[in-house]
Image 1 (cartoon, rainbow, N blue to C red):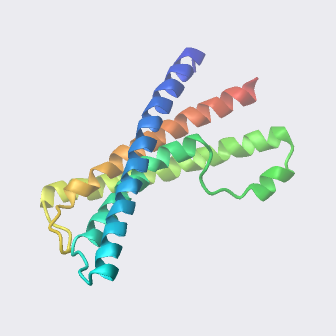
Image 2 (image 1 turned 45 degrees about the vertical axis):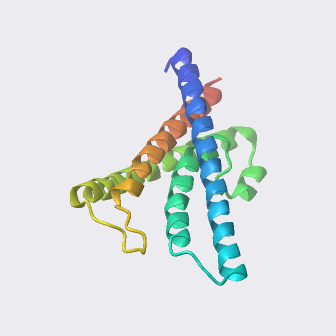
Amino acid sequence: MSADWLESAKRFTSMVNRWFLTIAGIVIAIILVIITYDLVLRNAFDAPTLWALDFSRFLLVFAAFFAMAPTLEHGQHVTVDLVEQMMKPGPRRIMQIVALGLVLIFAAFLMWQITRTTIEAFEDDSLFPTVVPVKLKHVYWVGPLGILQFILTAIVRLATAIRTLAR
């Protein structure tokens, strides 16, 4: 594995992750505005919206998939670091490599399942069973995209960890 390849891949995934994180942040802000709007209408004017909860749910899917890879890049996923803190640096690096390998296996299964579901959504062209008529494909497309970037980020992190161990 060439160091030039790895540096290029790091730059690419970091750039895409910055965009994804920005999009996720904007989506969360939109959800905040929608929920606040609904709460004000519901509590101050006794006129709840019919669409706020549905759109918030759909947008939350976008926020989750756009935030997956940036979270992994910055090492912010849920971890059990109690054992890791007790280990010496050499075994700790090996454990990180094993963990990243398991992350890639999980991500591959997730990609397979989400892609199958997304393809079905495009083939069926069906709607969510919600008040607001939204087609499944208009929400599901973000899943494979987010997971693909998650996989690329995991590969870069794994390659970096292996290169660090080899030194």
